[in-house]
Length: 157
Image (tube, rainbow, N blue to C red; front, side, top):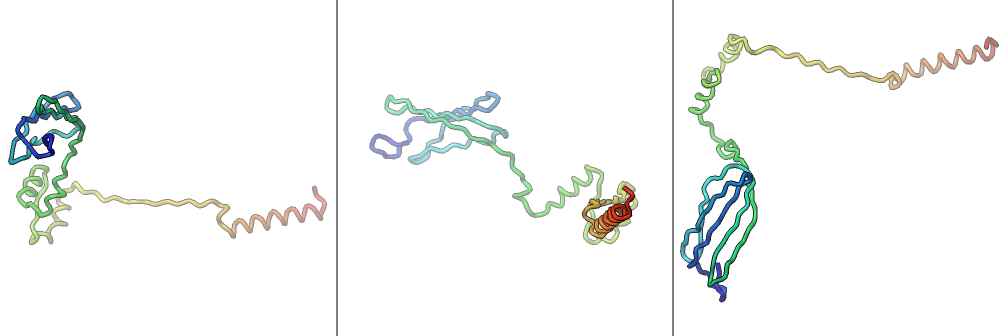
């Protein structure tokens, strides 16, 4: 915040009211540090929010408002190293089994023994229009032309 001489000040208390989409309000007072303010609003639930900042300086009431949104964080994007303890817990929780590198050779036998994996057969069928088969089209054209020629000159209309 600046005084009338545009010098940084932090004497007055600055309040911030954050309102969620559902109408829940979070009220904060900024911390004073040096000649500035700071605020840690903590963790807010995912959603859209509106905020209103208020301060009274020298009898003048100043306000500022706006909006922001909180997006979910995909933790998998930030932690790229394997957590083997967590992998083991997840596999046990969902009826699986964690296999070490030394046991990889026996993995196909373990999968067959489970009996839950079934083979999947994919079939891809394509169709072509008869008009696109050139030799068949030419044969039909020759037969039709021959019939027309024979009927025309032999007089059996």
